[in-house]
Image 1 (cartoon, rainbow, N blue to C red):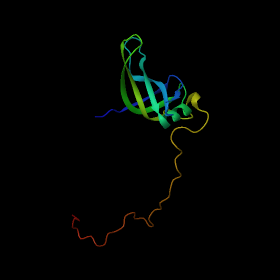
Image 2 (image 1 turned 180 degrees about the vertical axis):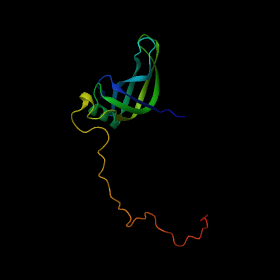
Image 3 (image 1 turned 120 degrees about the vertical axis):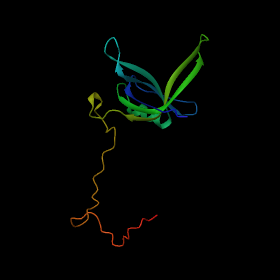
Image 4 (image 1 turned 45 degrees about the vertical axis):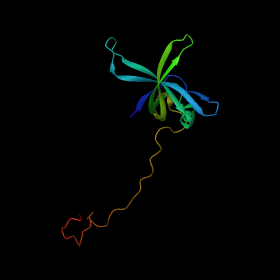
Length: 150
């Protein structure tokens, strides 16, 4: 079975970093994700607010580099939790367990521009593999007998 989800949106609050009793890092935050279509009444795009939970090094990464309003791309899986509230009522919630979180904007975008370089690493310098000498770029095969090799 396949359970994969990829979301792109803005953080609605700063990530909250906690640690379990065993010391495992866990961060929770929410993404505001615009839908692809506009609502019927106001012409505005509808927005979904999706709870995200990140564990271990992903949690540390998110809490260190992401803040409210920052664009993020989250790769993970959907998890449904059932529980009983204080009044004895049955409750259910959906959240995304983040496997990877990426920057959805660059340091040049908007007010999130200062500081360290975010996003993709700088492109490596181009490598010159050389070009064959002479005008011909293809070598002539001398012993081709026309037979297929299989």
